[in-house]
Length: 299
Ligand SMILES: [Ca+2]
Ligand SMILES: [Ca+2]
Ligand SMILES: [Ca+2]
Image 1 (cartoon, rainbow, N blue to C red):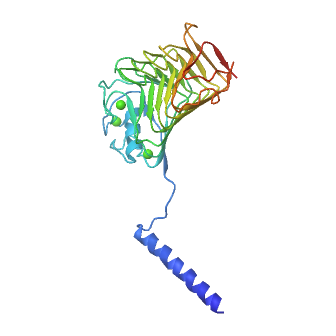
Image 2 (image 1 turned 90 degrees about the vertical axis):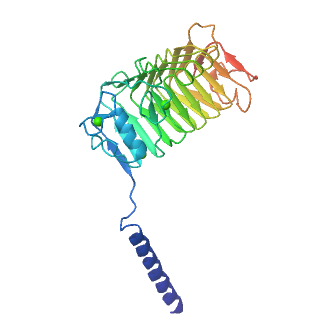
Image 3 (image 1 turned 60 degrees about the horizontal axis):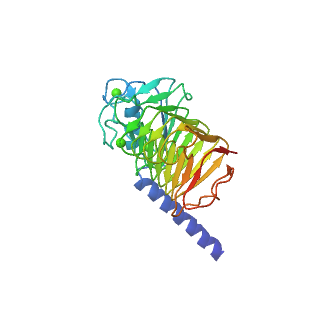
């Protein structure tokens, strides 16, 4: 009987504590926060209250978990998804070095998960057009998880790193994405990843260039996983297809080929990198301080 009384008292106490927490929390039960932003028009720009939701405005709402657009776009809230139609979204807000998504590339700072999904590569195209002298996507240190799927990322051009996409300390996933004809003056012509992680499933990384390292993909101090991805005709002084610097990469399916064929397709730099064992390349690359592979089919 004594045990039962104690149990009853404990249960009542717990119930009162939960009720108090509920009241202190404004009377709202916690719910998973997730929003989908649709009806994104193809034009670039920021103009609150004009009745049009641009991709840049949609990202601002996702980043801020609020409405910055006077109702043009659905307000962001937690894990946001931006759905893009079969348009060519041309970036036209000129200006470089901005990290607040006001101009130039599209800055993603969303600390939650942000998914940007299109109708398919070649259908939904996000085009830096060479005009803005900047990349397409710039995923900032503050960002959490970013998933980009079913789009083409094209014509980014940057003085620095990451011609098409730059990601720093975030977890980036590309699913069925084409990264085409982007250029960086340093490293990561198509995709540049520093810390965090990058996962690439399917898609193509095609005809990108970097003056120094990683024409297609450059990955530093991070884990990279590429599955079924075609990395073709990218150019760089070192690692035309892929350059891994002090990190690890796993490759499965797909292929890496460069033009001209004399260029090293995959470079793995020394440091904490795990050159040979991290790859499933055919033929297997040798373990050496700097590994260069002339021709590789990844299987
Ligand atoms: Ca607007
Ligand atoms: Ca958000
Ligand atoms: Ca930027």
